[in-house]
Length: 406
Image (cartoon, rainbow, N blue to C red; front, side):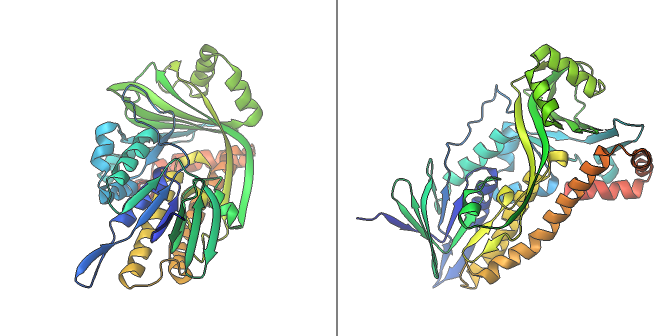
């Protein structure tokens, strides 16, 4: 006997983006025949979720904007995230390694308590999954993989590797930059490899982080120090150090003391000496963008639709906004009894999200090329530009608000 379970929506990918999207969709309600009805949602994830450990700092972090924090408020998880661990930062210091150009952003300039929060991946995912588990209209299949896909005119049927079949009107892919769903349905993508890797780790510095983010632009890529609050210790930062692949591999081969010395020098001792580091991770840097985010019965969100250079830490924020907008369009369709997998519904989501995602990707690519150029004229102009904007309060304040998503 076939075990087939019927849902309205199936989401593939139970990371932060997929779990947040599931939580937003679970809140949608319509009144029919005198009673309230909600969507039935399945969430499929191949790996068990990370467990938050108070005495261990996750090296993978996200710089969450105020716009994204409000999404967490909407879901109802922000206070749980903050209770675990979230570091609000109130300033950002950016400077050019090849000159004197410097700009400083401060939350007080726009009458805000902070610019955003640095939050560990394990905090985000564990909190969102805990919330999903409490929702009566979401069923989680984990660990599970999809063995077979079958798209029909009236829906999609997925066969899991344990032979359970799931049917739904809509399949949402939130399964990351190497999306199996995107490949299965042959979404066209534009991709390019930067020939670079990012070194990610957690460090302890001689001086306190001042609740500020520090970013130095070098010709080979940016070095970012992102403040963490590790059980009250403000000498802790997460770093993302982008380097050409050969140089990144050389740095990874150094012992901890040698690496700390190189990192201290590269940061121009902005927080004094780097005293200790945790385990280092090496991540290849690629950028990709799906030509379309949707087709009948299928929608891509987050890194499945677009992945960008981590230069400004905007990738996660774009993904959370994808989930929010898609949920809004699905809510409109659901309350009007429109087929959730209809291409007209899904294209409205694409029209709303694609311009912002492309604009952010173009800006990151422009920054990468600008600060990577050795042209003396460009170097002079970018240094002048940074210093000039730093003195123009109105323009700088607009940039701060845009970065916060306000």
